[in-house]
Image (cartoon, rainbow, N blue to C red):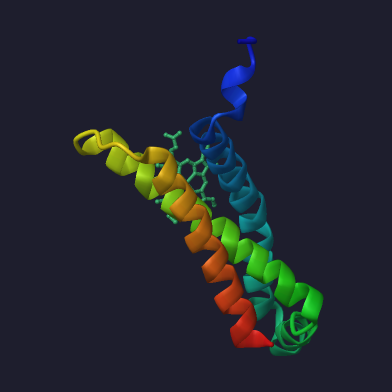
Length: 114
Ligand code: HEM
């Protein structure tokens, strides 16, 4: 077994996904506030931003973002349960379930906008 073998294990990958999704959300947040700030700058500016956001590529990015938020939230809830409740088996299966649920959320969003 090599020194890095643990990096192929599902729960190590789940921890990596949780960290990367948290960082991605933190990077997105200031841009979200900038967009909200357009409402203060004037109705016309907000309106043109909202029209720009109707593009399919922006909608696809929103679906990815929603998936990232869902995987971070579900992964975070799993960690909180892990830390505060009695230990239960099947953590890798729960992490996989979180991935599937997050993808379902992203696809449901796409289905609702296209
Ligand atoms: C939606 C509900 C959310 C839940 C339940 C949640 C839960 C958690 C938990 C439990 C941790 C600690 C992970 C650990 O112990 O290793 C964490 C880390 C983190 N979260 Fe969240 N979080 C949520 C939303 C957010 C949002 C909206 C952002 C960003 C704007 C965010 C950014 C982060 C970051 C940057 C970390 C540190 C990741 C790391 O260093 O591994 N989280 N989250």
